[in-house]
Length: 610
Image 1: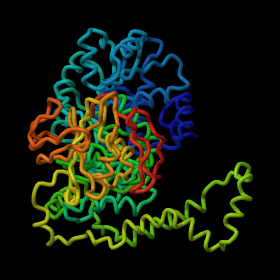
Image 2: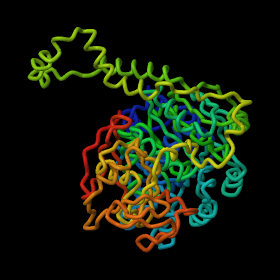
Image 3: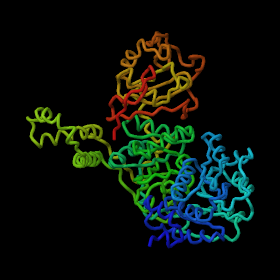
Image 4: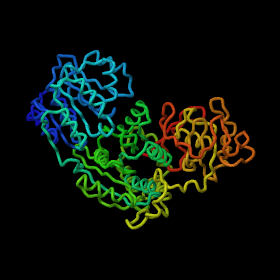
């Protein structure tokens, strides 16, 4: 007999979840479902992310509601748009074989008219983020007088995000006699206060120990100098060719900077942060779920609610300010009983925070060594061999080309052919990691080097050997920094690694170019127009006489295009103007990338490194 049937779930639902791959209940499901099926108690469930909490409350909800009625009977509140959509989708999948089940997802960043239309048509389950739910309540567009169940999912996250007052206002619109089910990964004082305020003697269930991490996650840390953080990060990624990870940064600017640096270096990456529109977020998440992205660079807020299977690594590029957030970060991997790795890049000053996290999660961190260049090359070589071994051959379509292939390769022995195919990818890693330094340090080292203002952890040595240039195009021309990178490379016919920092302003841009490539930039932009406007390139800084882009050079501090006084002390803009374009990823570090707009606005075909 199916174990879900034994818990009391009806055949129609069990058939649906069996098709989804549910074979046996997870611990939280096994313990929570029988309690919630009685419908008699308020409930507090503590379990880590990825343990199946949605089914733990979703399956009992489907047993408790009357689907012949079309008014709201259950309200599920959750912290983020992604989680809201995920819960609504899961509930619809669970109810596949039940008639007349209507679920609406209510969240910000989407058309509210569509959500109101769905509510007017009749719904039994409303899944919502607090802000948009309050907006709809304020329009008197929903009646919660018949709500029997309220679910607070990821309650600790909602409170961390400042939704305490919103939750109070929403719950005040629901009947006093309703049942409240609260689910949380941790139990801080604020969550305990909610339980005391809105619940009557709740049944409390803890799966695992409070605030601890998933037992299937390994916790690693790498001790490095702050200036080597980005280089160490790339080396770790390169030594894990099959990585499918989420990289956490502390700020939106850091997230954007790291993502753009990775794209420029040929990695299959993109960013997710609060400055993106819902459409942009959806596009990034679709690419990540489809695994056309290998690395998702995100802030804590943006990543909440992400439910993607088979994430191999969670990488803490920067440790979180709140220790509790580490639990939520690491919970993005090792979901549904699988294993995963959570690794952190730290300097000497941050060792105390690692020790504090160890106490909170009840598990020790293992200190790892940043791989040496030779180790990375070895990993990449055997990854190439594995790909050749497992590649699927389409005999029918390749057959017409085989005679010509054989003729071209007939002078080569089997060993020579193997060497050359493997070297196609392997050589660039050998070049890149030739004479690569040891990035590891011991705890007693590095304190002096780690001092100073290091906003994103990457080395600032890039400005040495670079020339800073000015261009009269900026974000008002609908460029992102990724677009600008491609625009410069395509016109100047130089590789992405020749470009340093890009400082995108409203009506102009500063960018760094390796000294040896400066002349190519000036030559490449001779006579180039953008939307009917001549593109002007100048050397930034002291007045240098005749500007080589067609205008006379200006001294530092002169106003350009009516908007610039001085680039010193200006705010660094990590946001976007208008709709964000998909960035291309180059196949090789230093290759002239695809996927960026050319100066006429056309798109060029992209090739992925992976």
